[in-house]
Length: 258
Image (cartoon, rainbow, N blue to C red; front, side):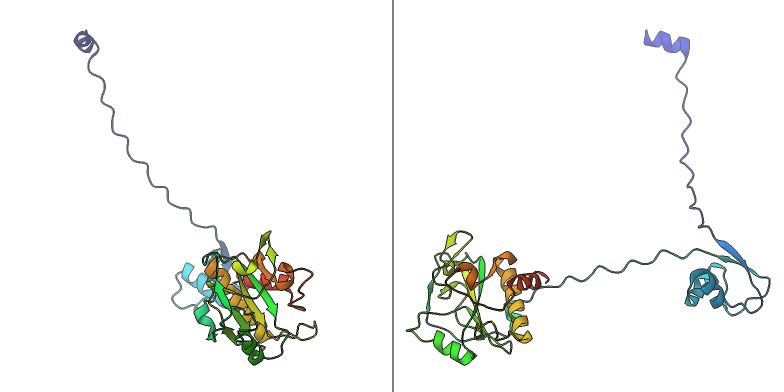
């Protein structure tokens, strides 16, 4: 049957190949024209159209002028639109400092024990020493009868001393609780600031900047939330007041800015 139909109707017509579409040239950007007058320079013309005489080279290039100083009265120049501005490069991300960047001195304290979980470091507790000198604080933390220590001490000049390794449990917070979890020493890092904690003794800028950088390094290393940078008074309310005069909210913001 198919053969009879083919003999009767004939073979199907051959479709001619479809030529590819002609490329559509991009339209030239619209331009204005300007007729050169006496006293004109390309710089003056660029100033008139672009508000910037230094952009005269755009007009020169668009009109094929090899010598921009050689224009003549009556010459008709094409004035192209300004090219779109080049976007500024993206800001270079600021890397937080590392502990190795901070020139930290190591003076060990014997007052520590093991954490229940050395990998569970989730909080930074900021203290004031109630002592006016770094030497006095270090001496006290090395006293085996003191039963107190901190991971870091920051002097008023910004010098940082580490006295207990991060993975060990320093004795700085005492009876404490944060976010419903007791015994902050188990999971916290203690930073002592040399300060009388009387609300009058200042925290010098060098000391504060060292605190910010140390917190940034620790937050980055242990993935600590900035909301978990706290004062001693946060974790031991009613029992402790330190660090009096230090704005913890501002500290959190400055740490997060890195």
